[in-house]
Image (cartoon, helix red, strand yellow):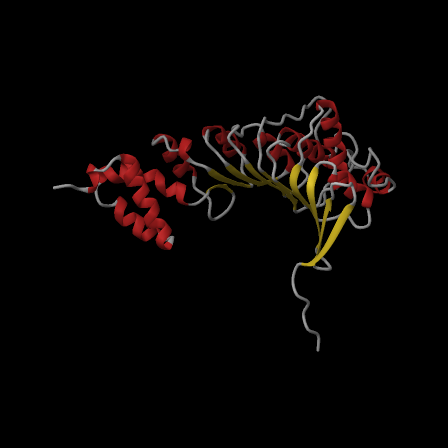
Length: 302
């Protein structure tokens, strides 16, 4: 009599996955895994492939015991999607266990983001970074190491105001940065969190400029990032262009918009307070065409 155990290993995993897609409920998956001890031990790891693996300080994260179980059964190499949310040093170090990651989302302080970046495998193609706090600044002796990734999607957000100064004094923190224009090369001071963010994003963009399809930047000065990217492109003589760049702030700064159009085919500028979206692209004759779109219908006032 033929049983489920007679099927190849990959076929059983596929059955479990297809059953999950029917209603996205673990109850029915567990009923298959509990069929016998061998199926449970051989396919327990599938539970961690159905949804992104979440590690860190959140009620939905996988506990340390669960992570140790993944290591024991050799399932870490099968994980494709990882969310790091306020991770500690131990969890950041564990990123090296996941050799086949494709999509990674990191929500942490700037220092933790920089530490985690160095642990990512070269297989990552979709990267989302959410900066929760500035953290300590880089010192002059610290080097910003960025992995060699070929990203298709890069998204950056910040829940805090990115610090533009490297010192904590009231004068340097408040007076000096505000006195500089957004196009000034010293808008973000050396060794400041803002400078580190710009260099990180610029290096990621430049390293992936031949593969990057979507670049989405919010709460960071797009002009400063573009300036670093242009410098890297000029040194490497890169000719590739990004498909779409989305930014949340340009205002009337058309110079920054034109610079962005040099490295992308289409630019989307989101004006959140007005619920408007500006779409810009350059025609073959060099003229810039702008399209204005309402992101949601206006509410009726009575």
